[in-house]
Image 1 (cartoon, rainbow, N blue to C red):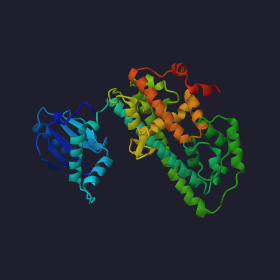
Image 2: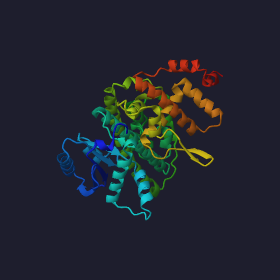
Image 3: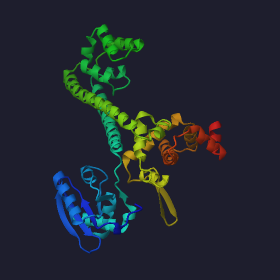
Image 4: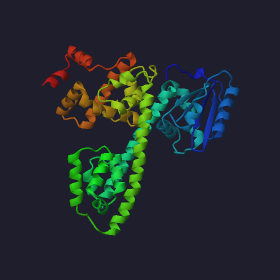
Amino acid sequence: MKGYDVDNFAVLIGIDWADKKHDICEHPTHSDKYHYSIIEHKPEALHEWAMSLKQRYPNQKIAIVCELKKGPLIYALAKYDHLTLFTVNPSTVAKYRKAFTPSGAKDDPSDALIQVEILTLHMDKLSVIAPESVTMRTLAQLVEYRRGLVQDSVDLSNKITATLKNYYPQALEWFGEKDTIIFCDFIQKWPSLAKVKKARKQTLLDFFDSHNSHYSEVNNARIISIKSAMPLTEDKGVIEPNQMLVEVLIAQSKVLLKGIEKLDKAIKSAYKKQHDKVIFDSLPGAGPQLAPRLLVAFGSNRERYHDATELQQYAGIAPVIERSGKKMWTHWRYSCPTFLRQTFVEWAGFSIRYSFWAKAYYEQQKSKGKPHNSIIRSLAFKWIRIVFRCWKTNTPYDESKYLEALKRRGSPLLTFAIK
């Protein structure tokens, strides 16, 4: 990262982390010596080690490089002002090791040494782990955890669907969405067709009413279907084990859904505290889930990226161009923060419904025969450049102003859209 030089630090330290212990390589910058040590992964041990460095190198900066960007080790070390944390991609260390260790041998101390060598030679190319504010870091973890729980919920819904198809497929027809409390409560109350057929009409109506399902036509259609439904099978050897599994899965699904709801409230609260909220609320199609994720993607430190290209490359949205002789090809960027890339791609897909120019761009590229996923990635690439300017200038996005700019430039995109 620009602004840092090896001479700024009294010592360079590489950490090869593990679950229970960490191998350390320590290299004072004005000597040719390397010291190796091992510290336990315990809060007390990490604190003692960090403070010993401060005593040995008083009033001096210490550079530490690790293959992590977050996690327990980083959280433990980030609180010390005398430590500057650099991160190096694990694949970089692996390739460096392979280049200078033809045998393919790997051991932890040598990996720590490799990290020190990379830091010594390429400090200006490595990223510094600069913690954001407490509220921003809280929001960053909340949105990522939420996305993980949503995926868990989807996976669980698929398991529930597959199991119900074995003995009780009608329940899937009565409810359009499976990741809802009303669906879970229905299956918990009536986990088989035989049981729900015994329920009285008023009991069913009361159930739907208590879950705020007040569509009389839909509810009546469900009840008629319930009373006329035929069992897929009456084999208890099929019904009983599948019913038992569904009851277990439904209980898990309810916990997940309530957990997601709890995270949504926490995200909403943390998001409200962000000064840049007005910028990301203005983005077409962002909404309550994606707007906080986009805010986290940019962060609050406006010196973090010098231009939009840096963010496009870091997020993995910018394609990689490779050349060999007279040949040239592009491919997807393999090494990047997956969640960050996913955030931009998901939002670009939603923006088509809410942004005039995004819709026009999608249709223009589609007419050229481009596949959907390629168009969305290209659209995300363009959006990053636009939002980056809004972010740098503290200006909310204005669709009308952007369309006017396209008109002034005589963009063929608008001509295509008008047609």
